[in-house]
Length: 179
Length: 261
Image 1 (tube, rainbow over the protein chains, first blue to last red):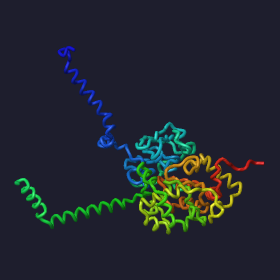
Image 2: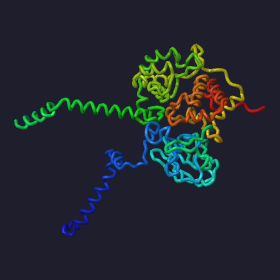
Image 3: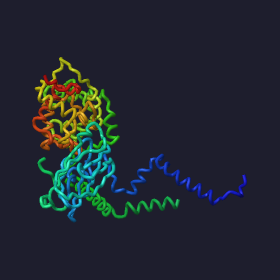
């Protein structure tokens, strides 16, 4: 082999690239990938096991929350085989920020009669921006097969005129009341 | 020599400096920690249960020693029966119960997340190991009929109308209202972690629990599925379901209501 013909600069570049590329599976092998990813702190990641204990999706934080700019935030949990809360109340004509996650399996929250549909994945907060111009009652259903009770996984979203929506302070929750 | 001397001197400087200030700092830190913990405790969030179904929890709940559980179960037998079938209808049967269900309920009783006059102090006397052993013992008890045992279990069967109503809900649920089928979580079709097996459960006990879920008196279900479903069910349906399971009909999921003549 003619060592004088070797392009050392090229070889060096190749070796460094190969080493860096090998680092990626190495983090998985040494199980340090999760701690490394945690350093970046993706705000859309949640621990699906502890939704009910701490964080954004504890029980009294679910439902429709009034924001100071007039829009509302809806927090939901999609789990086998229910959407919680089972009935959501939102005002018409204002932006709705939907935040939903799952503790167990992949679901998909579809609002029947509209184009809105959200994929619900455990460990990740799914976001959707919605707005309903007309009041009415929309049925929702799960559109991703999630197990034995999938076909009964349905709930209700009630869109009421803006004046009828409970006058909430910031942070209060609007509920359907008697179902 | 000089190094050692220097280190000793430095150490001395730390410990002999000003004990009152050190003590004060420690007390302040302690007070701050206590305040923080207290604030965390009274945040106003309703936490239904401290149990999280992580792989570690499931491994802990499944690591029991059934022989030690047998010895411990002498204390439970007075109410829950020698063979895991209780003599009174309003006390739950434990024989053949799903492992994670017993684990979660005992931990909830211990933490005061589920209220029961006899069970709260009893659960407080149990360690995690005791709970795992009891779980191992009771989940392996057989559920077949024993005429010599004093048990309330197979209660009289409900009338055909109620039976059909319950059978439909257990097998198919009600899609219009969004009620999933009971057997999708409580067996025998499928189980979710922490969902109790209802196939050999007492009817009066089940009815009481469904009513407590509906009124919110019992609120230890994670992410509130049972509170939601119990509210969606009507009074008659709750009674029909309790009677159906209490009569032992859930053991034969294939047998539907009698065909019309």
